[in-house]
Amino acid sequence: MAHVITFKTARFDISKETPNPINPIAGESVLKWLREEIEKTGYRATEPDTEDWGWYMDVEADGGSYLVGASGDADTSTPVIDWTLQVHKTRSMKDKLLGRNRMAADDPLSALIERIVRADGRIAEVIVDRDAP
Image (cartoon, rainbow, N blue to C red; front, side, top):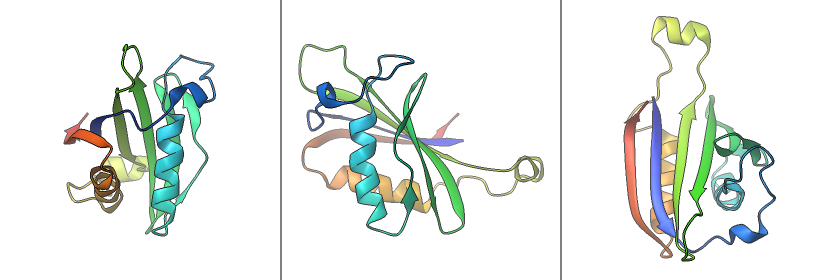
């Protein structure tokens, strides 16, 4: 299961993003901002990279490894963009077979990302789904 955080904001200028060569989906600017914020708390994150569904970065700390994805719906006539963040906990095949190391409802990285997003006054309509497939 993944945790999915959606929100709306005009905070990020997607015209300054590196073009995604796979699909023209925004997300780099959100992850660069988020990377700076989470690294202040001791997590380590890679530079954002492209994927066919948007952008992602790998995050590690506290013995956990995660994939954090971002995509923005930029097909609007306003500067406000609908954003989606996905937080996936990396699990080994053995973890999956034995039902271990699952992403908990109170996962620390997901909770941190939610706090960061909610703390920014330029971000609105934050919704968190802790049971996303």
